[in-house]
Length: 252
Image 1 (cartoon, rainbow, N blue to C red):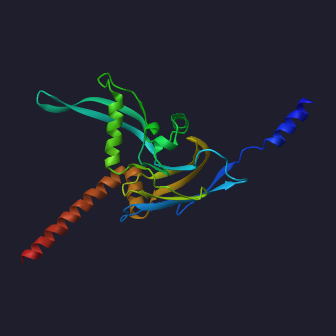
Image 2 (tube, rainbow, N blue to C red):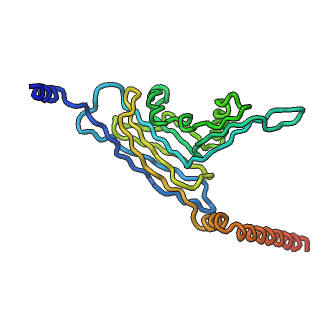
Image 3 (tube, rainbow, N blue to C red):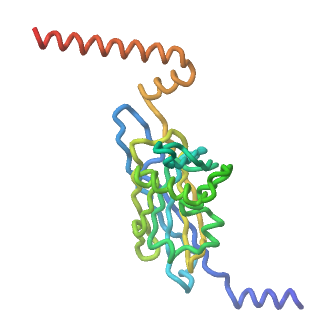
């Protein structure tokens, strides 16, 4: 009897429409060469549904692009006896080398704090500060300083309103990767939201790799540092000799 009632209830109240992300990118590999000056990635997609959109708040989209992470030491300089010295520091356990957040609207209006904490969407949530020295009693200020510096360098970007959403189905955005990229895998995450809650996610990867002469020099420096040092000295000497010879020809 109870099972029959549950079945009738399920038939009378159909499940809410499921929304799924179907996405793609203009390229999933970036090659760093000697003349590399950055790259623009087009991220696009659609919302797949088995039934009409559910009632409620409007659909929102967030796209994040995250570069390889590494520990960072943030130091503060203070003036002591007329000399500027490092007086305190904070070790950031994990800070992405590049991070961009593109959205359909202001983050405060489309994303809840709970879902931001759960998925780690904003830049602040991607950074964890540990190993704080005794002098650093205001660790939050150090993290803000790191955010400010990397934002000024173009490595951290918040692109609110830069995701175009058409008829609650099609979306696209462009993310520019800077010239000073760190080699490795760049994780692309896509989020669908309604009523400030994440209802669907998808992940993609962009591979960033040095190629050609850049790859040869990188491998040489990592695998044979002595040979790399000798080659650097030889090239410096050759460049100096070439400049001297050119100067003598110009004076002749």
